Length: 273
Image (cartoon, helix red, strand yellow):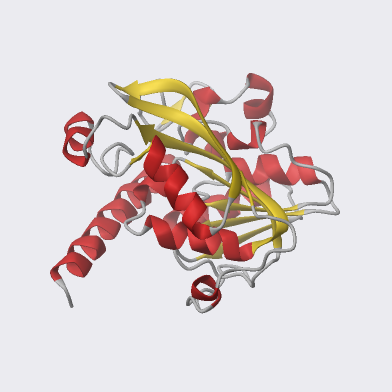
């Protein structure tokens, strides 16, 4: 095993442990005046980034477990009957919101590698009474779904946590139908910041050190085959670091690249099927 592979595995375990602890905090931790206490993060992250009407229609635990940097369901332009996949679905807030938007004829999938978050998400699904939802266990670098089965891929401040972002982009491209699209909230760095300078502004599990620059993000999506790429900053999360909305399209009629098609996706077991 190479030194880089060992370092990446250790970093992934650090991320997993952080989010497992966050799920336990919501599930077993203290309560606020009107429900479970939210995970303590600053104002640039969490459930406060959702409209009050959206928070009110979901289980309090789903809102409390939110650690994202935006609200991807607000910009994904979801339609009745579409199939949506949330990469790094956590406690399920974006999956449950998506399920309401696509309606009974559509379906919302959530993908997460953390057992504790999946357990919390399943509990929230039951509380919400959502029947068009399925949570899957796996990593965003090897999505356990067949090619060309998803209309829209969303994600909320998770891509920056991956140690293999080209694999994430390739897998996202693979599972999308031709003409499918992404609507991602993520942390993006100014092009002038080096990786070392990004690390000075925050750690990896805090969604800062692992962020791509605007140019790196665009280049990565283009390499995977995406077109119509738009990266729009919404608010600052640190000096030179921004929460941003990322949109892109898989060209109609284009199939996944050979490299993506030969990935190990589909080998992971689903949480619920």
